[in-house]
Each structure stands twice: as structure tokens, then as C-alpha cells.
Amino acid sequence: MKFVTVKTAEKNSVGVINEQYQKVVLLNRAEQARIGKNSFPDSMTECIAAGDEFIQQVRKLVAWVDTQENRDSYYQLLDEVTLLAPIPTPAKNIFCVGKNYADHAIEMGSAADIPEHVMVFTKAPTTVIGPNSIVLNHQTITQQLDYEGELAVIIGKKGRAIKREDALDYVFGYTILNDVTARDLQSRHKQFFIGKSLDTTCPMGPWIVHKSAISNPNNLSIETKINGEIRQSSNTKQFIFPVEEIISVLSAGMTLEPGDIIATGTPAGVGKGFKPPKFLQPGDKMEITIENIGTLVNEIEA
Ligand code: MG
Image 1: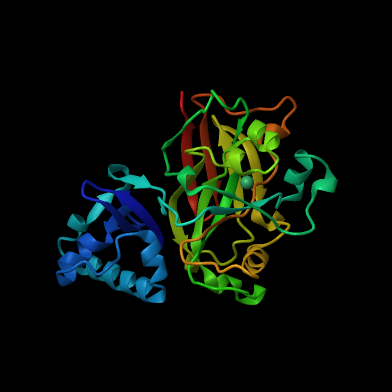
Image 2: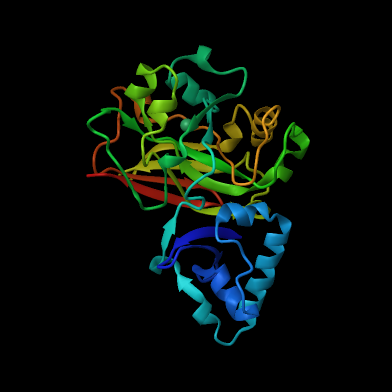
């Protein structure tokens, strides 16, 4: 199942995609027709927090729509809706793992930069934008805007001190995230936060794939293209720290909550890694594809 947040005239709505037809069912619109009331929460985070009950309720609704003679009236074509980031306004900063692929750690420095322990920084919630939205070029403050294609984990259940072997039980699903970074600000200010938190520098989506459709998050191909040129091509099996380890380390003393977002790091091939570097330019088109999830497309402000 793929979950989307759709911008509608009234308010944002959570929807589920019928993959056979590439169409969206807005949950509450269909639920109104089925039982005469909106029984789904309005935001994706609240839906996620409702746990397995939410998934069962969606399955029931999707099956009902399928049996209706006028079922087409419940569907909207993906092309006809505006998708926002699946979680458009996260409740807290996005957790980001740094240097989680050895080849990327080396391109950013040397083999000495391969971390022994999970390295984590965060991005402000105000960075988040959806698929096909424009990333501001921020030319007055940075000349070194860079892309980072990443698998993102969406936490589904509250927990602390989560054991590695239980970690995937705490996952709701997975999406694609572009950890856009101002390299000059990242190095000037020592701590990564400013260089990672410029407005619009966290494109996310286009949807969250429920975990039931991803048997192993640590074995997914990942590819980033800039203006059609392949820059990053790897597989999450190259992770230094697999998803289970990241969740276990992050939650050791800090509570993780439904809707928390964890970006798992980027493979080699970022702009800074080229000689000379290939930083993003106004008008550049970025496309990140992850196996079994989809493609996230965004352009830099021209
Ligand atoms: Mg990153």
C-alpha cells in the first residue's frame, strides 16, 4: 500500500493509491460514502499513530470501493492531484544519518572518515517540501548546493530502547528523501545544522510505501540523476549501519514516535565528490529512484 497526502481545496487529505490504475482514493471522501462519516484522522501522522487499526480500516475501505458500481467516482488520477510531502509538517526535526555508505565517507574525505558509530544530525521541519515542488536556489547565501538521494524510514510506533531484532516492528513504512545540503555553510558553521536546514531543502515523497511491501529495507537499489545524468547508483545493502541498528541506537535513550522521519544516508556520487565538484545550478532537475518505492522529482529554482 502506498499512502499520499493530497492538497485539496478544503484541506489536506490522506489517500491510498490503487496501483493497478495509478489512481488515488481519498480516505475520508470514500468513508463518507461508505458509512456517512469521516472516521480517518486528517493528517498522515495521526493515521500512522492509529497503528494496525488504521491499516485494517484502509483495507476494508479499499475492498468496499472495489465492489461499488460507481467506483470510478471515488478515484482521482495521480496526474490530476497535487501531492504534498507525505508528512508535510513533521512534528520534530528530521533525523539524518551521516556517512552511512563507505564510498560516500571516502569521497567526502578519506577512509579515516568511515564512522565507527552511527552519526546523526537533523534538518528543521521547515525544510520539507513535496514531490515536484521547487527547491529555492538560495544563491545569496550559498554557492555550493548539493543533492543527496536517501531512503527514509517512517516510524510507526512509539518506543524507547528498541532492540535491533524488534526494530522493524516500529516502522510504518518507507519513502524517498533528498537531503539537499549547502556544502559551504555545512563546513563554515562546523555543526551541520544550518547547511542542512535551508527552507525547501528536504524534498520528500512521492508517497510512503507501507512496510508490508518492503521485505528488506537493507537491500534496495537507489539511483540519483541530475538533468538525466546518473550521479549516484548504489544499493542499501551497502549501508554501514542497517535500518535496525539506526533505530536501536537512536532510541537507546530517546523516545521515537509515530511520524518520526529518519533519513538513512547517501551513497557516493554527490556533487562535492566530483573533481571539479558538480554543485547544483538554477533549473537543475533532480530525480531519485528507489526500488519498490518510486521516483522523487524536484527542480532547483531557475
Ligand atoms: Mg544525507
